Length: 86
Image (cartoon, rainbow, N blue to C red; front, side, top):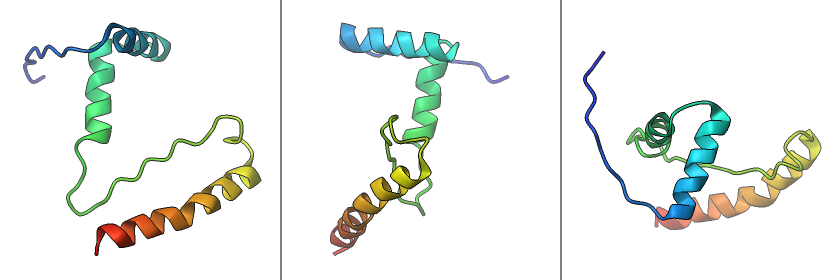
């Protein structure tokens, strides 16, 4: 196993509490939660554009509602990508 270095980060108390609660919910350490979040969201292949969608929980299990929700956002995403390439 590679040796680990210590990194300290500063965050507001309320945010730190949220991170701790989420780590406890996932049954992992805060350090592991931060590592996983960084790996997932910060280190992206240069040949890709990362797109993250947060789907409301109240529709997530209803395929038809998810499809409607995604279709409503689809054109906005296309327009944004077109304008960022101009």
